Length: 207
Image (cartoon, rainbow, N blue to C red; front, side, top):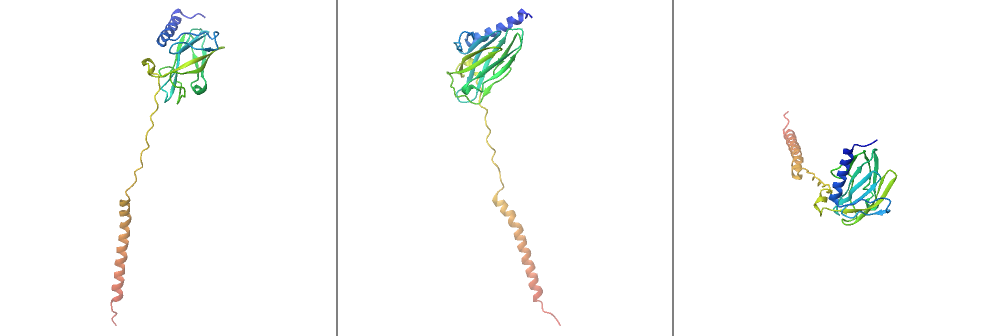
């Protein structure tokens, strides 16, 4: 099966534009087991699959997000796995990329992969394994914050927590007033009854 030249050209153009924006180069998985693409982000080619612009967006205090662009220039769909290690193990996922298509991972992409916290600070790297079919490569993936404007949009913000609403109770004085009213009525009733009894018993009996 041969792909249309237009589809292949579109995939290549998308990959080239991201590479230029992030300043990354491709690394063949057969060259080294621990590959690092110089520049702002990591990249690798595995057969017909090209992963570019691979980095972790984090501000060093809150959540972190995985960012990557995956291009499949082949004629078959490919399952691509990106697996973080260490404290970045939560930044892992498997992505089904259709032939002659591009798949974006990140806040504005087809899928978002985040973790609530990341111990590795910005400016350092985490190790991630990228697998496509029978090919795989270990990459040193940089952690980038929003210091550079082009990466600020990818840095996730913490979800604000709402303050508990205080419970409002009734006024003690008002409760006391309501409680005291029936007592006063009952006392008045008892007094009136007692007075009536005294009057009745004090009346002389006429013979």
